[in-house]
Length: 516
Image (cartoon, rainbow, N blue to C red):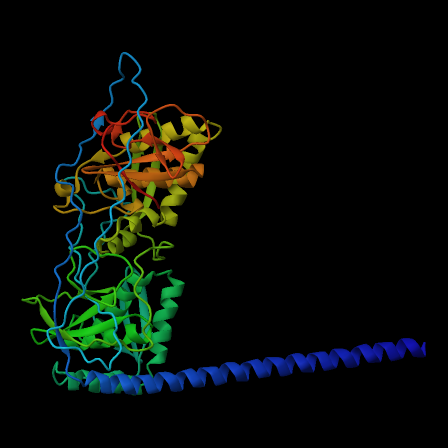
């Protein structure tokens, strides 16, 4: 009995020691974290002071490079109705275009000899995308009354919070009185003074709130850029001004993004470094990073002044890829579609997400290929299509999917519908009344990957885009060889054509293969 009591007491003693050691470890870890945070805060404080002094130096003059024109298909292929031949056509192996080397864009040369003592940084540039509107004659049906267009952010300050609408989400971002400022001008001295004033304020709660919104609402980098823009403009006077540009640059730089400020025609503009190419936006290139000129204000000429080195904490370029759909209050737009093979779908699209996609600049085509479908559209579309192909062979299932994409959507070129080239994110096909070959190819490739788990590539011809699918079944039909694998031609714009049938005019045309 004594041994049992001793054992129990020993266990209790060990447990107490263990609990105390765990508590000590937790305290030690908390102290370590606090120490690291203090060290980092001291580092940022020193870097802010150094960057303030750097901004006082005379900025260099650069020639603004013209935006790269968006890829245009001058004579896009209209949908062609497939006519079954009297005799089976011979199978054709489609030639694959050899990859071409892309010549690098020559770095922008400053007019003034750069200061060799300063490390070379990247530069940023941007311009807004013209709003995309559905065809006036065929507005999408909505389950609720047509929403009012999103207004310009209006400054509302109460209790040291800036409140504004961000694609249907009411944002309340805190600020401190010390963050308020007025620029005395656009010269280097004034920008430097404001950087110092902002750096000395308690700005971290503002940064933390912006980053929390980014996480909570699943915002990608471009959406975060827009969030800081809405906040900065609401914080000042509700529109883009020298003050709002300066504040936004500060917030983005402190958030770790390569944002810069430039002076053009005595106005301050934002420059932003991006990972992917953005079309039709003027830019500067430094250290192999393109900085796009982002401004809503008109400015003549192509000469601007800026500095070479970025704020040392700002290491990241903006990634235009969308890994997950943005979360926002759902404002439903419904539409029914039926294919010639009698697949009927009733889809739901979030109008708020469409507003966000309107504000997306045209960029690398792969951005659209990789973007996911929204949850609302997934829930309303995929179960119906999945049920339609259940139990079918790969051949029959993919034939049903391609017929749905071929025949359930009306066709118009981007030029006819919008007046400019506009690749669609997948959801946009179910919102706007018309779509073209590239949009259908993106949708078809998404459906085949998502519902069938099969590999799909896009085929880029001089004025047309189609797809090719890698089957595990033995499928006859027109095909191409890519990286030692056989892909069967599937053309979402060749109306009524089954898999393995290439438009006659492209059978001998080399195709550029685009992988996701």
